[in-house]
Image (cartoon, rainbow, N blue to C red; front, side, top):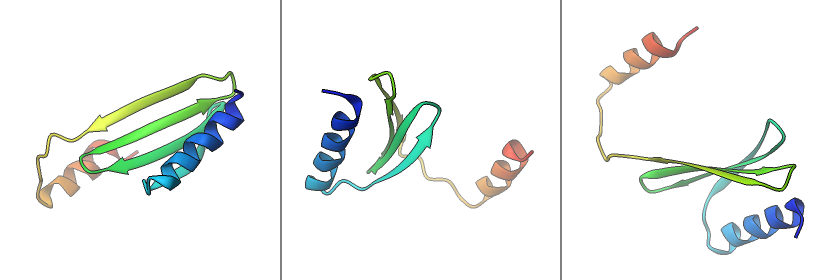
Length: 77
């Protein structure tokens, strides 16, 4: 199965299971971002046929609004 068909089948399965996702383009492929409770997944379908998955899993820690200043301090250009 080629990359395009695999991508469409994957998106169909997400729709069928009512899993929310968003699409984007990165490097040489299509990025599907999936958010589920406590996790965020980045699934990349690449032109060469490979699929790369990166998962970001929450520790469950909740922070206060003081973290906003840290965001601006540490990640602004």
